[in-house]
Length: 387
Ligand code: ADP
Image 1 (spheres, protein in one colour):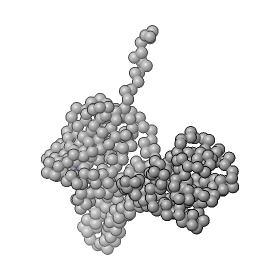
Image 2: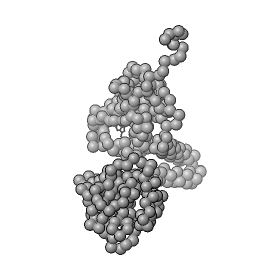
Image 3: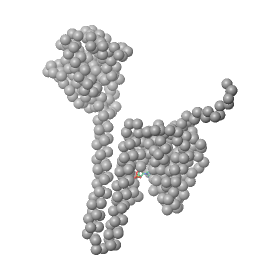
Image 4: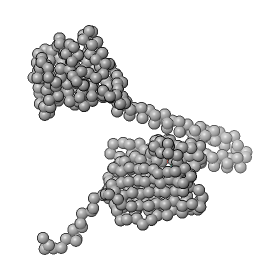
């Protein structure tokens, strides 16, 4: 519940204590009345209606801490079980309000539900409701706390990733300055400078791409996208890198299919898989790109004959900045964001990416996307006079 909700409820509390239930009934009138409250005497109907109307967990407790009424969300969040509060911490908060007489707010991390799988972070607020009852409001902050952590981690990771190339740029420019009399050294340092600048550019571009994909409405102007065109563009963009190491990019027959989405984003996803396949392939090998339609979906698989990835790393490689071999990734110019971008790009298109890989045998990364509905028949094919 946001602060407006709390203010609203605090106001409602005042009204209850002052004996007016009209506002509460109005509040509740916009919703169907689910029988959320438990059987108990003495809780006015207005309060029950108010609880029915609330989207967040709210519980009214009597003097023995029995649940006199509760909102549907309180049951859904498993805060209430068998007419009692599940968590001793919440019961403790209610007891403290009863003994101290003041409204109290606490941030609590509690086991999720009576069976306690995982935890939930609750912003809990309790206030006296007349002389008999205590109203407990709970706001589930688990997701927002998790998102905050993810954001903090991401910023810490980016800072760490940027530190090295930025420090290198500073050192190299100093070195160039101090080598004015030695053109050969200047040339060598300038080359390093260009490499580090490229690395910074790649990291920045990948970070921007990933943030774009993670923002709301990441796919602007989606349309029907020809899958063969996506695969062809991704292969073409990797042609030079592959032939430099005599790696052949082999695509099978591509069925005529379309998906709904943004071509640039889809090309980037397939491109990243081919980049990785080339980087992890031995010279003179082959990278296969296969496309097949199955069960209303299209699968694009990129297979290499490289060193493969140990099974325990399979779930981690899609995390931002995660590399199985960080030194090698840096050496080959990797940003550690390629697969993360693939994952988000594909998810934004309603699909998923999976990996099969065996050390010593190679890897296959498969993107699965829902097929676009068949295009409507063009008007020109309608025969005049046909019914
Ligand atoms: P990077 O920029 O390091 O390639 P990615 O997010 O694209 O970052 O990949 C994460 C890690 O997954 C890589 O560092 C590498 O260890 C592993 N990886 C990705 N693709 C392959 C592949 N085709 N073969 C072997 N390892 C791979």
